Length: 152
Image (cartoon, rainbow, N blue to C red):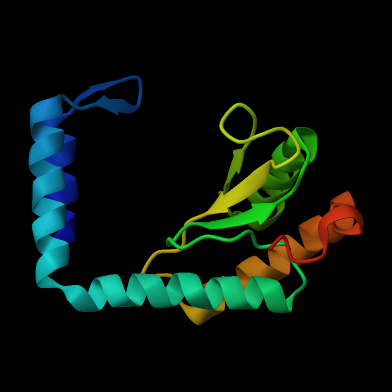
């Protein structure tokens, strides 16, 4: 069912240069469809919340500065825009993991962070690999010397 939704979005979007521009009507339609899907599959929502909670526990246990969040988003404090970008570049190049850095003006200066969004489909092995990659990145870039304590 999810693949059908993805395929519908791809067909409705006008592609250009490898990107898809989707008009508001199909996007709204798919948002409604995804909402109905989630309502009819509460186990998926439960799994999503469980995955986020588990990742937060793993990161804290590794000494990484997980910031408070009541959602599935797992923000990890970096505190420096250059280090946040260096960390995400290293995670992608060395470990094949894509994570977004969040910098000023989206967040106040000095609170730059990585925005991790686990899905219901991220298994324990993937999460363990992520924690290992983040710990290696923190240590290599020296981020841990400034922000290794919990950010709460």
